Length: 629
Image 1 (cartoon, rainbow, N blue to C red):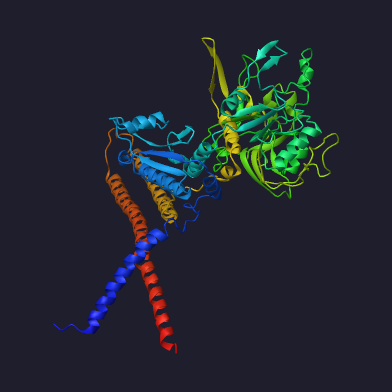
Image 2: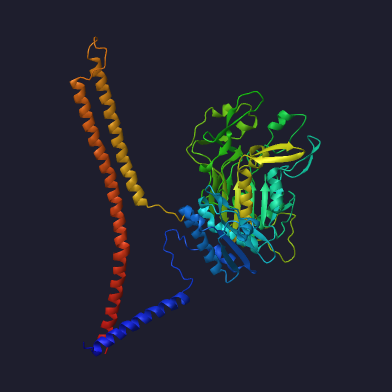
């Protein structure tokens, strides 16, 4: 065998190309580590800008412990794939944190120290199968000051909020101090003396829960300033606020404040103007609140003279003992169809009850983002507030009720740049501290949540109360409390955390396959109905033939005509069944054909296209070198 110089040089070239390929691959693994190109439709693998800013702001190391029973999850493929997705997100966040987030992935084995550690850190296992082996899919975190937080279990149904939940846990560990909530209310929500009963009153349940979770500071309705360390300002039924108080709220909003507002056409708990000596006159008192000057400046329009009546969500109420329940068009039980599905505030809620709620609209021309959180059904109408003030029979609300087909917004999230409600400067009597000027426009974007109802905060609409062995116990039967606490929890974070909203689901159906299945099922259903019609027609024919035998025939005898009819029916039935099988086979053939097409495109066409492009580029470069002088 003769070895020429040309073959040696060709072999050396191939060897050199192979070594070059290996070197480039190794170099790329190091040089391009962390580089990604996200070509998914909804940019599913790209973290939100707010997430990146939160990770960069971490000052002290945070340890994350991801407890994932990967081997046990083999029994549930969907759950295992979701666990891998969670782990990949955690690894991505740790890689982007510049070493501040330290991730530990743990697969707890039964009766091991890791299992005990998971339970101690607040991660709960779910028993599987008859053996009761626990499946762990949760996250715990600790910071440098022995603070800890946990997500007991990652629910695949909340996949679109995965990034938000994890980043919120990291943010809480990086900022362990309790958020400060300034609470201004014209309703008697806190503990105090009740002059009507002459006894001390208990605080509302939602007020007590907020006290446990946040650093809650009551704010007087006459307050002339809002402390700079306030994370969230809550305004419940802001009624007859002084100009000085409104100006302080305005300046807080322009500084990028986070605000939750509850206004109402009729606040049942409003005791202003009540007269114990004349309760009938008190029923007609004005119990509305609107905050028009500030809400308009923030791009929100609210009319306190109208109440949303909704026939589809109306609840039945009993006004007097012994009477039958009556449907009340103004007391509504909102279900999941009324909630914003992609907002963390309304995620996971079941039922929210409201009473005589108003509606919200964006101000025309306002440069804010207006996003509905709660909406009525289309079977709704706006009724004047006068019809509810002296209402003794809720059934009268149905008189003249004409649905408009419009879904009215009962609560909304508003964000963006706003202008002051006091363009002429501070109101009379308000003096700014030396060196401070009044803001005319937003220094930072406003984050606002507005509810057109205050009654949803009342205990009677969402909790049962009972006394057991001297202990005052409450049990929630609606999600009103979760709704309010979600809003506070969301707004108590930084603007970066608020910007991390729900994402699209990672599990995406094959839309064309689903469409093909739907078309085939429609055809299958048509054939089934045709078979049923033929069966009924044949049975009627058999009945007619049987009745024509004559009155002297007392026994069931199959005549030749009946036999021919039955044979005809059997033949028809077999033919139709063949057609049904053909429909199913056609469906499978179309789906397989689509799958084969995708495989050819991914395995052959696309690589061949890239190869042709590479060869074309190489030929172009050789041609340029050849013609170059």
